[in-house]
Length: 170
Image (cartoon, rainbow, N blue to C red; front, side, top):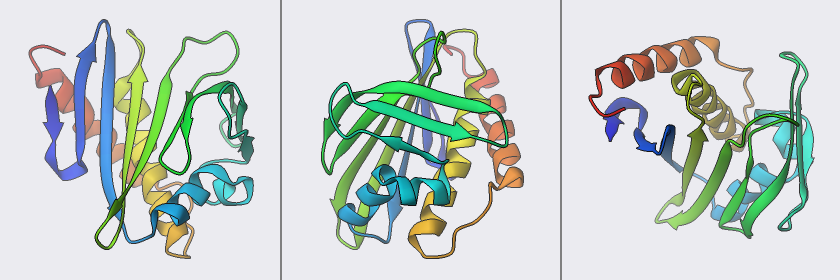
């Protein structure tokens, strides 16, 4: 396992794939975080336009209009307001499970994001994108939504690539 301390991220292998985990403490209640993760009018502020049916087997559709990426998958795990999991994939693509976990904290909530990147894909790039989106989530929850922070994305991507390159077992 490799840990990138300043980003709060860990990477580990899972078969041929790479599992990345980000943990962030937010200054919001677990219910506020859950609403931002699940409500269409809130998703657009930090992730993309779309909707997630909050039931096992429900549809998870997100449309990243600027990049042309469309996510069209199914909810694989749900335990409101604690766990939401779906694949970060479109039709015909390999599964990329994405799991959001929300836990109470003394002054807010702890959000843990886990993403599995299939073998042969750029895990550093994929997870840097989610680091940027979690920054967008924190800003949206604070009432000051921001656009995608490309500099933050590039800095995280470069740090993750360097860390993964140095890791003997990844």
